[in-house]
Structures are given as C-alpha cells and as structure tokens.
Length: 441
Ligand SMILES: Cc1cc2nc3c(=O)[nH]c(=O)nc-3n(C[C@H](O)[C@H](O)[C@H](O)COP(=O)(O)O)c2cc1C
Image (spheres, helix red, strand yellow):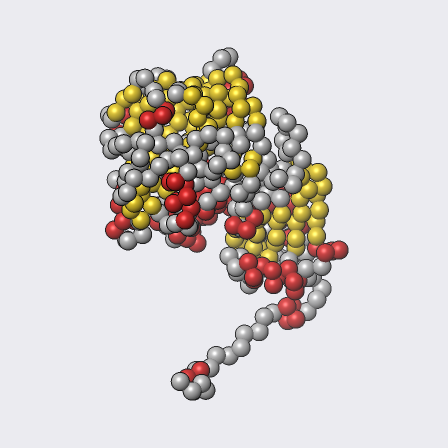
C-alpha cells in the first residue's frame, strides 16, 4: 500500500499524536501562529476560514521520531536508509487514474487555495512545501523544493537558487520551462526532494527506494506527476522576473529580497477532500527537511576518504544547515583534518564542522561542548578556510547579487589529541547507590 500523507495522518491520529483544530482559522497569520505555538506537534486544521473544503496539515515531520515513523525505520537508522536509497534508486511504477487528478480546475484561481501568510514582514502569501518536478534536456528529471510567493491570481515568484538543478534546466530551454508542482506529498518524497544528489540523479527514484511512489502523466505536459500527492499545480517557469521576498527563512532572519523567475499556473488538480501541507518557515519541520538529508552525503564523503566515520549530525543549534558534527573512530592523526575537508565537500553550504570521538553523544550539545573544552587546542586543532563559497542563508556572509555567497569556514578537531595519554581524556563514571538508604523520606 502507498503510504501517502493521509495514511500518515491517520497513523498519528491513532497514536494520539495528532492535534485536531475544528474552529475556523484564518490563513492570514492566524494559522501560522497556532502552528508555531504547537511547538512541532503534528496538527490538522479542519476549517480554513477563507478556503472552504480544504484542510491543512502541519508539523508533520518536525522530529526525527516522526521522520522514522514516516519512513518506517528507526531514528538511528535514518541516515543509513537515506544513504542506501541514494545509491540504490528504483524505477517508479506508472499508473493511470491518479488520485492527485481526481478534481481538475482548468481556470486556476490561487486565491481559493489555503496559501498561508506566515509573518507580518513576508512579501505575501507563501507556499514553502512545494516540490517542483522539471525535466533537464540533458540530465532528465529533477525534483526540488522552491518556495513560491503569490503575486497574482495565477502567478508566483519562485526562489530558484542559481546553478542548482532547476536553474540549470531553465537556462537550457528557449522560453518557459514546464513544471509540475506537488503539494501535500508523501514523507518519502519530501525527504528525497530535499536531497541534493549529483546532476542526473532522479530524486523521484530515490523516493521510490524509500517507499512506494507511483507516478502518472501531467495533463499539460509530458512531465511525471506523483499519483498520491494532494495537490498538483501544472505550470511554467518563465524567463520573466519579479520581486521575491521578504521571506523569513530557516535561520529565523529575513532573507534578501531578489528578482526571481515568475511561475505561471495553467491548471490545478487535486484529490477529493484535499489536504494542504503548511511547512512553517524556520520551524523544526523546515529544519529537519533541510538538514537531515545532508547527513548521508557528508557520511559518504568522509567514508570515501578512508576515515572510519560512525555518525553525522546536522545540529539544530546551527539552524539545521550551517553546523555539522562528524563522529569518527580515529585511526591516524590525519583523520580529523581529512574528515573536516571531506565533510565540507559533502555539504557545500556548511560553515562549521566539529569532529568528535565515539564516546561523545553527538545529540547532546553539552557533551559536544565538553569535548571542545577538554580535547581542543585552537592553535593546533582549528582549521580555517577563509572566503569560501557558502550558504545564501547566513546573514554574516557576503552576498553579491546573482553570485554565490562567500563565507569563512572552520573545522574544529575535538578528538583526543595524539601523543597524549588517552587515560587523561576518559570520563570517569561514579558508581551508583540506592539513595533510599541515605535520604530520609
Ligand atoms: C523545506 C525546503 C525548502 C527549500 N526551499 C528552496 C527554495 O526556495 N529554493 C531553492 O532553490 N532551493 C530550496 N531548497 C533546497 C533544495 O530543495 C535542495 O537543495 C535541492 O535538493 C537542490 O537540489 P538540485 O541541485 O537537485 O536542484 C529547499 C529545501 C527544503 C528542504
């Protein structure tokens, strides 16, 4: 059976993990505020004031436990499941009579959809959960998130990062690039679309290796359409540009306003009783989707240079994007430096990388700080890489318009130093006692 967003919502409901909100909620600010206040708890809004007939789900994969449920694996296994799916992709089955095309709207009116306005500073209502599917003339299908700011009844501006899959395809075609834009996607598609694999690797096939993702055919192009997504916008990325932003991004700060491509929508299709997915910018769900899929690519890059890597974490304190923790079993004094350099190649937007030993709990920030406090000497163990290509999301970097952002990068080797007695770095654990024998009740 295909695990779509409905199946997942039902599962969470049965486990008592879903909050249902029955009273009408406005898509203008109110919904975002309630979603934020729920602090990551999955929520189903059953009554959207301005969009009758629509329900909106949010905070679906706001924790690693929820991702593990969505992918039917254990939390600790996610990184290995993703690494395996990237390596061993599967062809998607093709079917007719798609649930995602049950209702066909030929005269699109985006105002009828529950497109959410999140923050008072935002340039307009935004879709942050949309997965674009486009075809590159050389590399084939590319699936990738692009946020959309509504600028008209059938128009958006889309944030399309330069030189990545969608932008490369757009630059190659004369005129418009056809796009299928899927909203309300199965968890395995959300995760696969967040991965940035080598050019020519089809993220839909990664999704198929993570779970079942049958496809059908679009109605206005020959692009594939995910059969069980809730909503499909069929349209074109044009060469026209207009203002995109301001937008509160992953870091919780306001991203730059830019001239970005205009996307025109030609047709909307959706399931009966459709469910919209509100991906709240800067929320834990946004962070998980951005950062976690980078862990397997870092893991592989470190493994490929011959370092015995045990685990990788993109940490929430680093906005789940800018900081990576790499846990290794050090076998040679060069290993931490090799691991740092490889990790930066496995996640090109990462700014700081910390390498630790196996006895450090990478999920505990206090433990990480303990490793830095007791094992790190800046003059020997700090690697600084000035003025590198970096993340567009870091407000402290340099952001020349139309060019890749520049930033300094640093690697911290917080492993036990070589040439010193390892015993002096071991944490001693006090033997336990039964306190009832000592403390009067
Ligand atoms: C929640 C989320 C939102 C994203 N929003 C955007 C966006 O607005 N524009 C963009 O170009 N990339 C965005 N990305 C990043 C791309 O989805 C990601 O880097 C993609 O995998 C790039 O792959 P590609 O090189 O195959 O195109 C977002 C990623 C996530 C997880």
